[in-house]
Image (cartoon, rainbow, N blue to C red; front, side, top):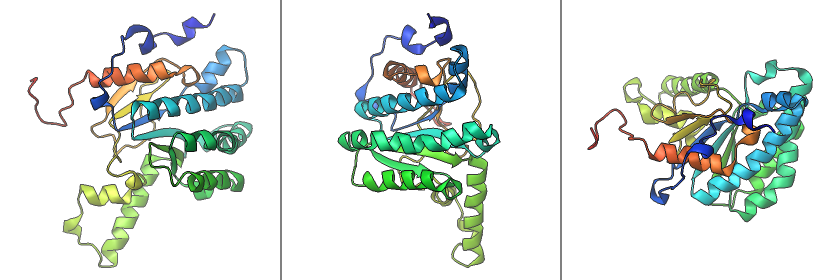
Length: 259
């Protein structure tokens, strides 16, 4: 009935045969389209967010099974506070519901939770849910499920610059010694090293923009834009996106044997 809502799903067009030796170590996803998914079904926007949470659960397990090392999900941006109050309140409750039901499965699948962003600005119940999930899964040494929550890349970069500048002011760092590694270490993705930079960035729902997400880290990431709205994103869609990633020639500004 709703097939027209999922036009250009790469899973419909791609014969997926993945090379297990070339699975992207770090996959980042801008989860877009929850509201439009709900609107197309004459449902309230929060119904889309609820279904999107179920998609997170499915895609997390699928990514872990494929051998992805880090899955970073853009859950709530520093700009999302501009949305209607009722929607923001619902989004703040989602991590509570999500972790309450999903942490046992994460532990079963050896998935560790990390969160980056200005979490100190979140409601107390949301902070507790996040911190409890981090604590409960800290012993897991499989895939890292990294949520970007109250995160914005420009704010992250400003905060990183301030930290670097403070080290210079304190005499701990010379200006001439500031390099890429210095910046990497000052950003919120530092704990993900050596996988702090995504190999593959996926955005769902047909929008083709970055929306203030990992601006430094995606300098050489492969970008994949799909029309599939996030609630309809499946393990097969993920595999198809990775298959497209594997078909590309990543040169990082240099040359390869293919050129």
